Image 1 (spheres, helix red, strand yellow):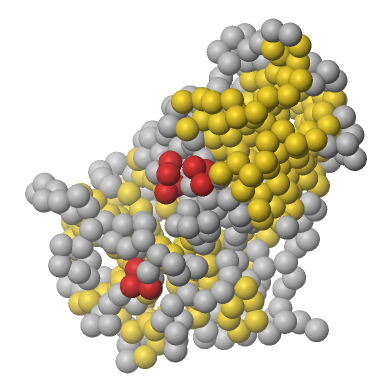
Image 2 (cartoon, helix red, strand yellow; image 1 turned 180 degrees about the vertical axis):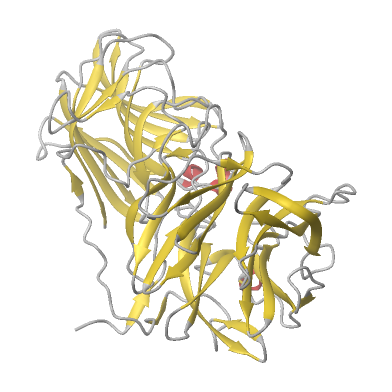
Length: 518
């Protein structure tokens, strides 16, 4: 029997800044990716609850230059919209190029090369298509008169010529936010409902004070009047012990039967106010009263459980816990750090295995290391792999890696010491490396296992699955959170091989990788 409720988050793990659109009975959703490649995962659903990834919008180096990007640089806040048979995704590459859009007839791709939008300062671009077919660009930019304080920004609008993909006409300042001297008014989206243009934004910054506010106007160019009930959603007043925090950056969608819903980001701290999972995608109901949206009616806060949307129930696609690397391409869940300029991975050189080539590039630098990772999606989880690797020099290493940023990461690796091969657990904290544990290991084939129980991360190794020994237990994982490392991303974990700044012709083979929540 189909459940009558659903559980939040609908996309657990590092899936921030969600944007959504509906085409008939189909819903499409995208999120930010920052320094990870491919960029902007795109998901499909028919019930708003069960989402299946159908690809990435930015899946080619020609679309996405992340060279040298900081972990929290790269791609910010995409918006997805549909107009007259074509999908549009607009976003900002804060490291290279600024604001751009791409288009596709099929949301699964291929998407076009970027149309770079000149004269669009700031971030968080969005698109609105009016009833007369005209298109508009909205964005957030620093106060042109000079930022009087950190976060002194404004929301602006300009018409977009869809034939030339250039902005045209006058720039209109729409709103500076609901609060006096609001900080970081951003994430603007325009909707037209019952003759009014509604401008919904985020303000308060992306941390604990995050909030959603809204204003409306009879004209798209304004003036806009703020909702007297603003903010329409925030958790900043609930305290740091509340299990869902920093809610904001929402996007609205209306179903075919007239229901309204909002997708938004929020985080689930654990082990204290630590958010290793990053900012995740949540879904909340919305209804309209007296011309304004009411979010999570009767509650005013985001809940872990709600009644399901009044839509034909879908099933969450079953994702195999174990990837045996038997396919011709990597699964959509796998990502790289920054733009890969060479094929350092292979599924063909040894069929049934993922081969990673050792390269001089390093996790601890703003480079593209030989790392293939996925998002951490649970507070309690187990990750396992079996690796075949024989390090030929002391600079060579391969194994499991947990990455919050180039300055904050953790590696369980096989390497070579002066007296033989070693299993090491290496912690990088604020750019400084420390060996937490070290054990001699003779074989070239090793089973590696990482297990997290809350913020306690434990690591095991062995020649067989049944003979695992502890390498280190109850390592404090709180440094793998933005609350220690700073930035906007969640932890990713996966497989890594490197030669630490020196050339190498060596490689590591991984037979399978398993990740499951506990």
